[in-house]
Image (cartoon, rainbow, N blue to C red; front, side, top):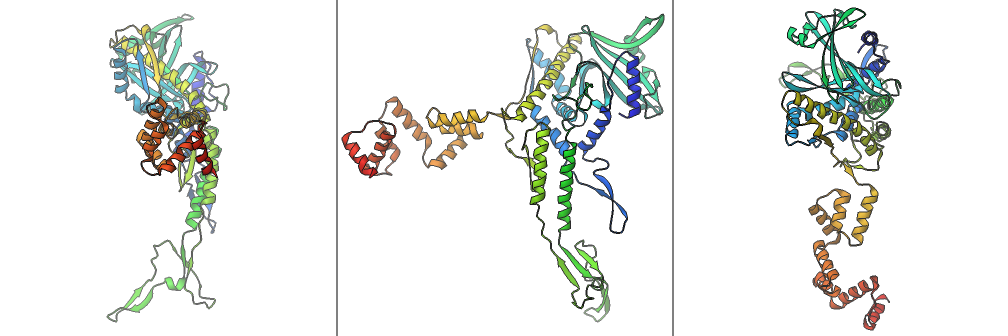
Length: 554
């Protein structure tokens, strides 16, 4: 949204009795969008002088961390395992699922969240009826103005739809308001040939039929003047629009109810990362092997072929970039027409510098420190299993954002069920319905305290070591069994069975040891092993056992 449009909209909304905070948030969105694309004017596209003083255009490569951060925050919040649920009526879930499937909800929602947490900071989902069907539309901060709010909670929004028709640029403005249990969508149209501003009032016939306008037309008298408005209105406890923002404050304009990008305060770190990445790339390019050739050697040389014919040959391929031609290389009498230059490139320092910036970045965007890794020229994850401890900063920030998202999704479900009830697809009682969202918690792992307790329980024999391994490392039961067998070289299941038999009194400890021994130890060695076990458990020894034990210790 350009400055002219922002000023025109502010003037319009104030004239309609609203008090929007425009500020500079829309200019910031354009800046955040440029980082999301990985192409920032004045940083990635620059002009520099070469050794001859000529300006040349340079394009710095980008690690695209703004895009990466947006994807990762989205993945922590929403994926294919998330479920929207409605109960209280046997038919309600099917009605909801049909609407979600028809609107490709589980494909569209991740895109909606990513663009909201990334370049735009604010997203709006709108549910509406068209052709007797419930539809969901997703809009973003660049086409949204919050016109009424309570502290930072939006109460009404204006959505701007832009389109071209008959060589004119139209701006369709929809006011979504909710007051005293009544949700209203008011329509206005403006058009102009100027692409910058809002334009002048125009007819809504550009998008609506006369029949549709007749249904929406309402007239009221203000100061003896008839005012015509076009709107639809519902009596409902839930508005048919939801505003989504991250659980972070807008420090660009503390008065504004608009949200900010997850990386709004990290663009300086993006610059550092891409600058170091560019430096690494240039050092890699400059350290490539080069062959310096004397100018005379690079020229065409007259010679004879096998038939004695005179031919001209060039001994170096001028299209090969590793060759560099220099004048008078043999002028010092060395007679060397070619010189190899083979510098050593060490990427370790560059990689370490980029890693430090990534650590700082992940902390600033709410992913916790050390979330990313940089190896072999690519960005990965420190934790390849991508599981998160429940006492980490990543977990806490995720929960803040999920609280915001859940409110949006629950109100979306309420709106859908209301509209489905309006068109007769749902005939149940809306007041009896209950809504919930099941987020994917498989990415969360228990904290170190719980894992340590599992280890202690395994040591004490309360649970098997396989159970501990499964909990601590996320492996299957079969994998845990293989790990344990490799570690101790025996069948752990056999040990557990014998241990249970001894505990229940079915067999003695000595009998269990004989079975487990499997003829590996002699009778005397087995007896010593048995006595040592008794000592470790604090069981009194007989005189014979004590004598044998003392003999063994000595």
